[in-house]
Image 1 (tube, rainbow, N blue to C red):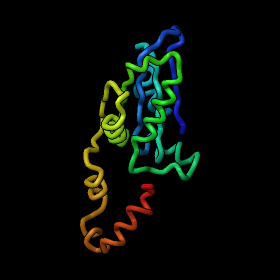
Image 2 (image 1 turned 135 degrees about the horizontal axis):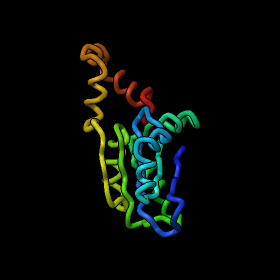
Image 3 (image 1 turned 120 degrees about the horizontal axis):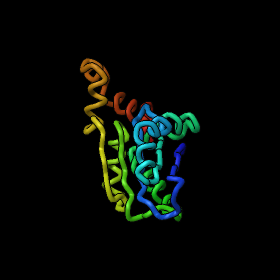
Image 4 (image 1 turned 90 degrees about the horizontal axis):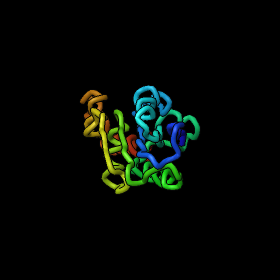
Length: 158
């Protein structure tokens, strides 16, 4: 996955780490300008995260599509962080923007190593988001079996 681990250059001590999850159409690199540089100034390690389905991940590998268990990759990121000598594993925070907020909420529900959670997401209900995108007549015109097939196979949730 295209993630970037950044750390303040002035210290070798164990520091708190902020994992930054971008939105569905966002990139880890733009998160540097949103929050990454400010976190470094405040002596946090920063891990800029793109998970399956995010743009750069998908461009690198077409199999990296959105997953129902979107929290699973955050656990792998934290596994990686645990191998880094400069990471204080008792001070792992996660912030998610937009769809990243949804991913962050799910990750915090399953991953006990996350000690702080910040959600900056308008997405509280993924089903409602998808139904808001399409006019109601689309759902009425499409047989339910075809709609289920489209969601399961064409929306790339694997």
